[in-house]
View (cartoon, rainbow, N blue to C red):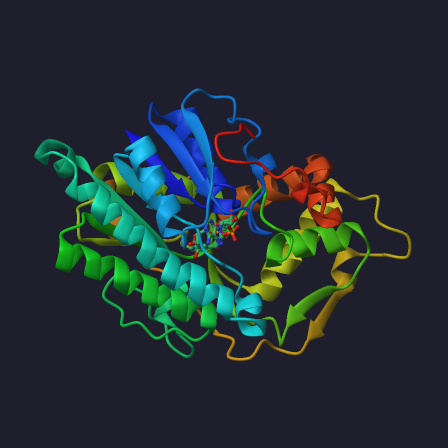
Length: 356
Ligand code: NAD
């Protein structure tokens, strides 16, 4: 298959591209706008593959999408491009409306046009996998329930509201126009190469620098955590074996309170980097509680039994093994994150067709 991956320079997208190039025979066309969250350096390991191509484009750009579909004639689309950071969506929702809603609409239209031009055999194989989040389901505060594929949508933040809207658009293009759409909703991802504004890398890098570890509210918000490579495997499994029209929840069976996550990181750093910054007696001492995020959901929890049962997928990493791999990666890859922190990763951005 020749797979058009959108957002392949992001955290999860780059894990997906690496997984496809390293572990399958499929080819990848990576379409990415290279926003602040896109980092071509995350693809350094696979960018020289002759099964990899890059297109520098915006999913809101109708003409660019049409040209890319014509140039590459993909057999499938794996749609990850999005504005993804909840705090940014509260400070400025506009980009989220543009990319997550308008961009998804444009991509669905470009895929529909491309699909209409395929012969029957190619149409029967074509897939559009729309990648989304468990945040569309809202808040499970005060219950022991889990999100299933049938849970009603109740998004709380501008981010999750735009993702919810994009899920509805994707399903509508399936139902109304016959585009072979599948939707996935996944819990919080963590792992190597995550942009340092997100909880886990932010905490690791602050701790290494002896800076405070800011925890929202009382830190008792519960999230389900999944190692990013497990998510990448799940997405390719859904693409290859999922049933058109179906939704698959993806999760790690790892419900953890945010404070417990931060404490786990501190304990791993005590073991792996005992040589602490000046003035720091214990990494846990750096934890400081800050004003909670407005509208902050208290608990998310995913029931991932359908994808396990029907597609034989389950996570390979436990929370303990995945967190250890993550901390070890940040300790061993200062060159990657120091260029992100300094902003140098944005220098020398690429044009279409250029290798990263
Ligand atoms: P990310 O912010 O790290 O990466 C997003 C990528 O999309 C970047 O490379 C960026 O340059 C690109 N992009 C943004 N706007 C674009 C546009 N208009 N046109 C083309 N490219 C554009 O995000 P992520 O954490 O890797 O998340 C990827 C997807 O997975 C998103 O759809 C997100 O909603 C979903 N998701 C994320 C998580 C998580 O925990 N991070 C969990 C579940 C689902």
